[in-house]
Length: 418
Image (tube, rainbow, N blue to C red; front, side, top):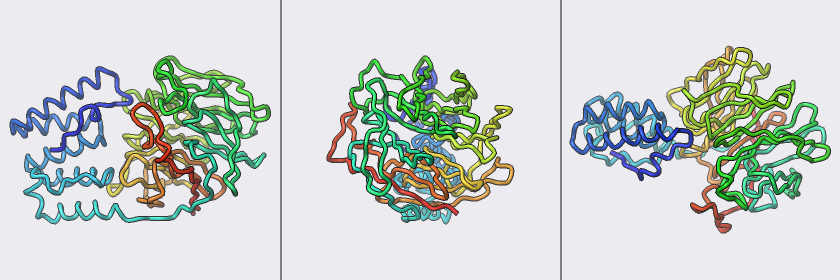
């Protein structure tokens, strides 16, 4: 059985304290049952944990172990397959819990699947390298009327404009009262730029008093002045936003699983995911803007019918993972997902059916690229998807201090879609 550091296991971005305590209690009980070789109870408890937090690496591993120890080889192998598709670095092959399975064809197939995940798939190409090394970009957007490329900065708490040919950067908006900048989107008229921001220890001049703060900024593009600010009481992380043709803004919250709407300069709750979501990320409209696709970092992709506010969850094909989707864009009835929460990191195209309520097929566009290190949000321009391949989250220490020796200049990639 795999046992990780408890601090890591129970670091739940979107759980209340009581839920986290419940999981901790169940986990501790499951460990005691395992140690006592009470495998029936161990299975019951790991099933409960998996229902509370699907795609949790430790819970998934222990569930596979519990199935194996209870002689359910079919479910043990299916769970190991799920584990491998979200993290192919987990060393389960030498675990005695799976000893009786090790010589079976099913087990060998899962091991082969694990090894196959290391294959490098390369469809995206380097566009340009930015001049500002410590920028730590997260999102980007293109303003076609002024032919301006903009990128957000987590560390520097600003927005920069950059030359798509040379990579030269210059400040577009930098203000002392801005938080770390994540997503950027302009309205159809390019009158206002809408900006999702949040407080992170990794940003410059962070203080503990900023914890949990997040704002959506409405910026006048012509004057580059902040025209309005939108915030919600509590602990929030506004991770992405999207704007429809009527100027209505939708905002995802990674701190609390809620989707907000800003209409006529009033911010309200649009759809709550508190009962069935965990960590809301990227947003994408279908072509008609009748449906909104919302990525959940730990669960997959939800589809919201805009007029009725009803939501459903997409079922993912067996041979892929729903976990770790950050950036999400829509093109030609296909969702392009930046999956930075899986190992190896990949960019996946999920083709939808005609009703847009199921995934009909998928294709890996990029996989296990050595240049990719935490790619995040993406944007579509013409027939290409653009994203920054290297965001230096791993270069910070536990206090948010950046080790510059571990940072490379931001690299913009693009992938032609067809």
